[in-house]
Image (cartoon, rainbow over all chains, first blue to last red; front, side, top):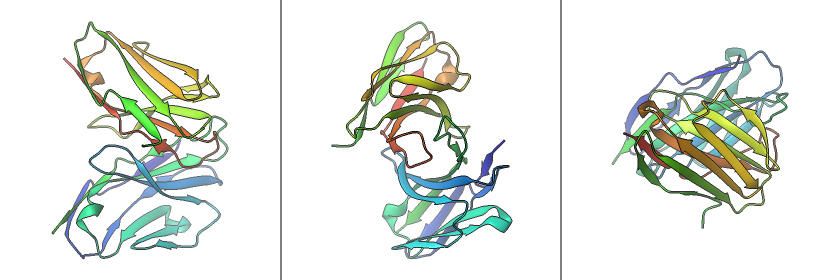
Length: 117
Length: 113
């Protein structure tokens, strides 16, 4: 069975600090996909990134970066120079590629990030 | 205009009421989903529809009844709910069933008294 663990339930930082959100996953599949979503106070989850299990290159998108380490089953997310607008709940999720029903995402419990001015 | 619209945003109902949640997507997607987000549990997938056919039902109690009349609309009919069913119910859509990004609505915050 697949499982996603986000050990940090809540993080509070001051604006302009860097912050890393941890994600550890478990799966028996060799082919899988990892995701990060952001849930602002308005409620809808917003897609941030999808990474497949064969691509271990780190990715950077503006102030966001992701570190995928297969050896430690981790897919951590770093926000550089955090801003108040980054305040939200962030979810890491896993999907096993072979599942024929597709998009059977297993979500972690989420990390609530509060960025104070 | 958002791609996935859910109504109502908030709903309070008694345990004997019958109500329905509505979801509409304007993205031309073929797959739609219901997720439940409660305070003490991770997001749980409830139902998956592809081209109006249900492809997954994750052991959801029969007091929740989904309906997908066409690929743009998804309903969740509620009857004789329990207080523990109080949660945020999120609808999502995707182009197909392969593991790709989901587009979520803002959810319906349901309170069962």
